[in-house]
Length: 75
Ligand SMILES: CCCCCCCCCC(=O)SCCNC(=O)CCNC(=O)[C@H](O)C(C)(C)COP(=O)(O)OP(=O)(O)OC[C@H]1O[C@@H](n2cnc3c(N)ncnc32)[C@H](O)[C@@H]1OP(=O)(O)O
Image (cartoon, rainbow, N blue to C red; front, side):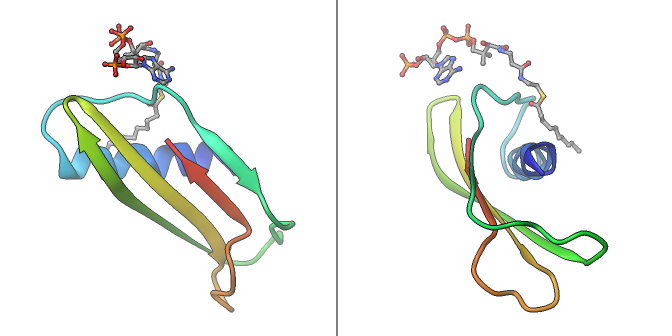
């Protein structure tokens, strides 16, 4: 789950900013148990950019219910 969040955050930064990037830190909050064998909904948004640093927030939700996030991450 943490790797998924890292990947999606990296992808958003790659698409929205110029140049190569890499994760400096990844903070993950596990808020609920993520179900197996069900689709997941993963969302990542750039929170702010300061110089060459980009801050990203991401969530993973149940892909069928879309209810409150099971995981939250910030990078
Ligand atoms: C289609 C494409 C899809 C792409 C998906 C890709 C998924 C991406 C997943 C990954 O990124 S995997 C790679 C995992 N990451 C790494 O391997 C990074 C390893 N670490 C580094 O390369 C360096 O430590 C890093 C570039 C992050 C920072 O080195 P620098 O020499 O640039 O840092 P420097 O010491 O000059 O500090 C610059 C600023 O960053 C801050 N900083 C550095 N490391 C930090 C850190 N770890 N956490 C928080 N802040 C950090 C530091 O405080 C400072 O802040 P200020 O400018 O405000 O003073």
